[in-house]
Image 1: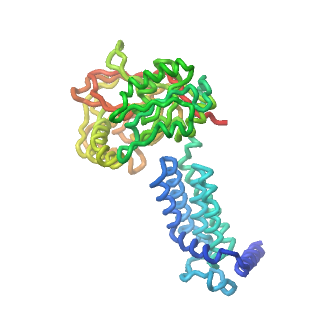
Image 2: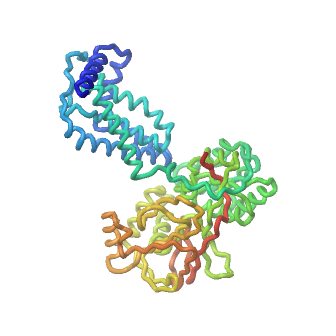
Image 3: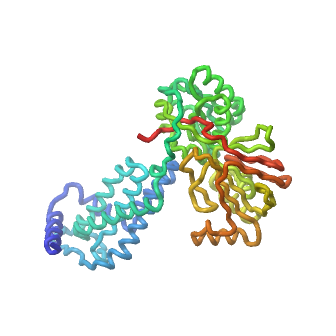
Length: 493
């Protein structure tokens, strides 16, 4: 059988080498050279990450990770396990041949493995982008036979290894589709074709901080042409709280819903108004990070628009903190923290307007790690020195002190994580993280609670919630409101 397959492989190579392929002579040799060392795919990934949004960057990262695994597998296992001579070039026209012939084993094709791994990895994040890359990947794979450096069997084996590498990466790092938040509990919300009855408040101060302000109103009308849009914030806009209250009154009169364009702080304010007025909320991600929208499964205006028009919605939990039992307090949809993180947010906000949000975040992280000191608090009655107290609204996925995202937005728990103070606490925690064992570090404590009490907070301490920073009172109680907010979200079929 091996002899027959080898004979078929050589015969197919000869047929491809001796056949005229119109237009291929000018394209395929250049294409195969551009894919040397994965440069073609790395360039595509870098360009996509530079001009695209978060979904594009995520797809590019998955493609590159799949390519890296495929390349490592081919070079460390594939080519060392099977020694196969390169094809004889007698039947390949000289004009097709590469100027520099490879000298490694012919089996398997590294170019084919990288091409298929990258395209498959991207497709796992977005099937349409993957389909767009498929012809390019197939052309690169075919070019290896066309230029005479591989047999067809080498290319097929490389393609199989590339696809396997992409599946392996997906096994270690599931896609957002695999970890999509559960559709339960579903909630009743009106279907608003074209956005009729939806009153949207767009915060002009959210999102991009450098360059001209984005046209949020135009973007909303592009996907929901019949929605009413109010622009607030900026130099001339009305205050956010006033705009939200007026929009909620208008939405109730129309029997519709409240919509919001902005980042997590803006969405938090809109959610409080929606809960108070008993309205469903439509979240259109227009901020810098958009954690709540992305955990909800809403990554684009178009996705939010489809949910609004179809009336698909879920009920999600809201967390609240307050200084006393009879005080109103504040709510948060994502995270609450005391310690180093509020200081990071404060420094980031100070520099974001000058150098942009991401560079400011890097600068703030460096400054906080250099200067932060532990706080002494009472947590549920126990006195502790902590470097950071993090509380998430619902359980976050991620190792130890580095929560990533939530799978269930209505699980009824507060995700509490504490980085204890003490000698060399940060160094010990960093060492545990680098060794892949942060959960076993004695510096880190974790718990899933429905209620948390914090007292003896030092005067002048800052707290942060959903990206906003405020002075912390001496005592705080955090608790959950189960399924308090109805929010539009596409439900799985």
